Length: 445
Ligand code: GLU
Image (cartoon, rainbow, N blue to C red; front, side, top):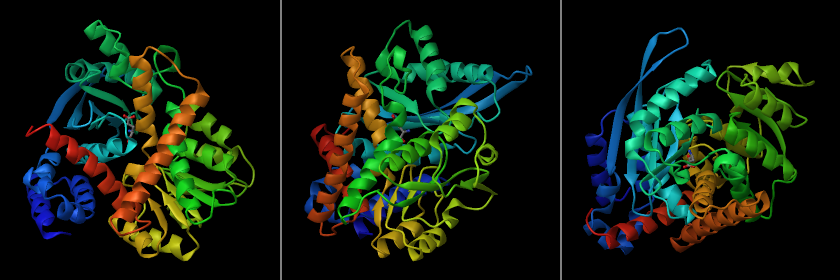
């Protein structure tokens, strides 16, 4: 890392002790930015990095609610408003027991650059709670969401901060959150949240967008080597919204997705995952992946273990951060891996990324490859602002254009900085320069 940047990075780490994932995300971005500061000394004089690493505002709050047994429950809520240089803070809410300030900050920090890469007018933020939705009834989810919004509402707004979903937050939760926001504020402010239901202000393609976008981005990377998804053997981790739609899109392009996972294990289905069955189990029944095995022939379910033990030519990690380590990466590379498209945020460890880069594997980092979700959220905001709703075909076309645009910008930036094919460099520099220019133009704030 460039010595000037290393000094800034060390201060950030010392100032934010115990936030391991945030440290990792900051370090990863800083490692790409040395050459930018050689060309743009004004970014150093303007303290752009010091400012970017200090969120504009961080909110931590108590979320009290009553479970079905009548027991009082207390969770912690977060919203970290990182950067509004390019637009209102924008980013999802994650409900998962692992959520803490360091995780919300890593996600919010990544979101700044991801959102910049989309070319849409959105800043970066993230939030969530350590609430565990697993096994909770609809009524419990509703009471939790209502309590969460009873504090959050005062901090958000269509011109201020626009949350959406992430792990554990989908259409059902956005519905309860929106209902409570409307009730408290007495405003039908569609643009305050994205990922809404289609009949009340949501956008077609938003549910599919992250998974589809990841596959579109990866297809663009494959094209640079004269390849495509057609005939590839794909392994996807996860089986939530991002994974399911990545599987559907990859298979529509002629790939065979042979395995996917959840936190308990993975399934191997050499004939190709039956997406409709997977949707039924995970989205309709809210069941576990284990149920897939009994309902389809010639499938094996492996309890525990890692889905990365299964060979693939294309790997799409769509579960969570740091799920693919250096050993798994080395094994995949030895067994014929061509490309990795990150559907999740920071799913590859730094060691795994180093292995992929060393082997010149096509590697699409999450902040570029999974930007289709938030980009389509920005399309939802456009539709809300104009009180319009677009067709599926039109919205999908916009998503495809945006993903190709992100790919091409990352590739062109990597070329410009002398490291062709390095999408990590391209994404970090491409996103950063856009935000840095806007920050300098807007003065010291
Ligand atoms: N949580 C998603 C992400 O990581 C989407 C955020 C949004 O739509 O605002 O980008």
